[in-house]
Image 1 (cartoon, rainbow, N blue to C red):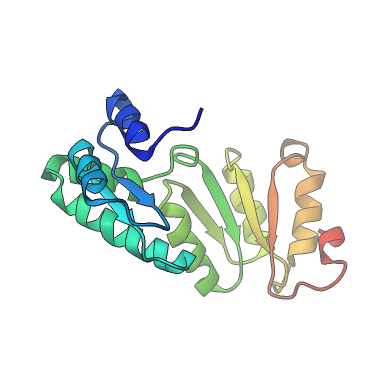
Image 2: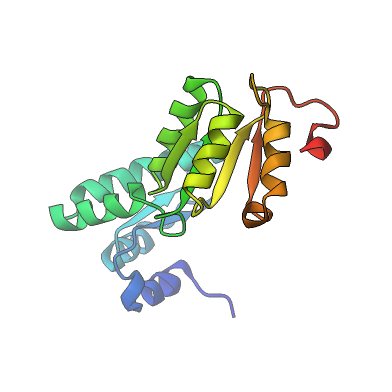
Length: 186
């Protein structure tokens, strides 16, 4: 059956795991003063009514959530921020090998991956990549640049696939030159 916003918020507040969640209600018509008072008494609620676009809804929601986070006790705020910005549990402890001759790419990818608790190894060419892989057989995935001097990504992937212990290792091709047929070639 359909329920009112007030009934829904009562259920959320009663649920032990969700009782402190900030709640955002988007309505095309503004609730009456008494309805808004009831909503605010039940929980920390923002009622959005004037937002006409998705961007406006997101902007108002972000502002409300930011205010709500700042009002939390310090320990809860730190716990929430750590959960949001900390390592991603599914990725924490994974090991990635980046093989790329452009140090800027290695730097950018390493920064992004380490934020999720991923250990990153790198090599600046295919030959060094093979050596790193052989010395670290616990690598979970390889990010492979295709266009490299000495031993390019295509040949490096071919060699890796020829090694029994790495036959099924996930390899993601990284290239700026996405030409027709590159996917099949990898």
